[in-house]
Length: 157
Image 1 (cartoon, helix red, strand yellow):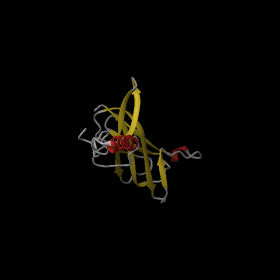
Image 2 (cartoon, rainbow, N blue to C red; image 1 turned 60 degrees about the vertical axis):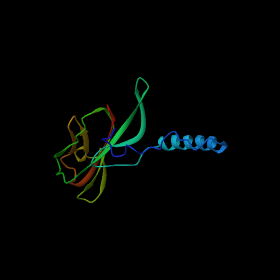
Image 3 (cartoon, rainbow, N blue to C red; image 1 turned 90 degrees about the horizontal axis):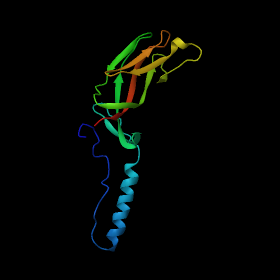
Image 4 (tube, rainbow, N blue to C red; image 1 turned 45 degrees about the vertical axis):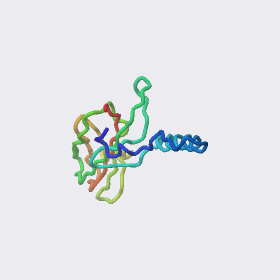
């Protein structure tokens, strides 16, 4: 897994401190600390290559899989149009999280997907296919000035 940004984000799960009485306590403490640290969600959101999220998924045959995360910055999108962003992900089983946030020219901040319960054509959505992230704005949605899309996926590697 050398193609991820944080392949060394975990503490080693074994360590030998010496062969005396204190080493037994230190070895157990180290293992307990490493297990606790390694079971957290890792807060790294890179743009250049994926990062391990620290999440454990047991989707297939109760076998542990980790997810990877990557963010994608994008610029303006006009009302009633879409923006396609190549994601470059080639080896995955399934996406676990797909979301985005945008800044509009009204200068407000919206989550994607965004639904306006009063005017459905003001909605904004995010879709992902095998090659692209698609951000789609409804015909009456305010234009987007910038945004960030986040993808997390179960990897085949």
